[in-house]
Image (cartoon, rainbow, N blue to C red; front, side, top):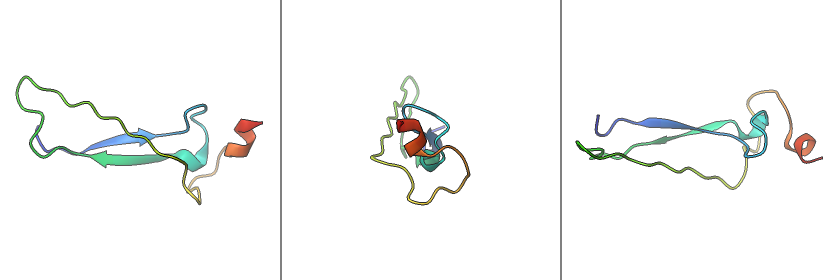
Length: 64
């Protein structure tokens, strides 16, 4: 359905258990996709959350 928001999950590229990198980004394209079209979404970040909202693995533990 055109204009429907899509929540794209985000996480740390090397380990999905790093709590500071759990996040989502809502994306929508108001007039797409039309019939016989599709939308490709790429979401990138340059870091995690400054204060993780969930307990879990820390980035420093993964990098060791």
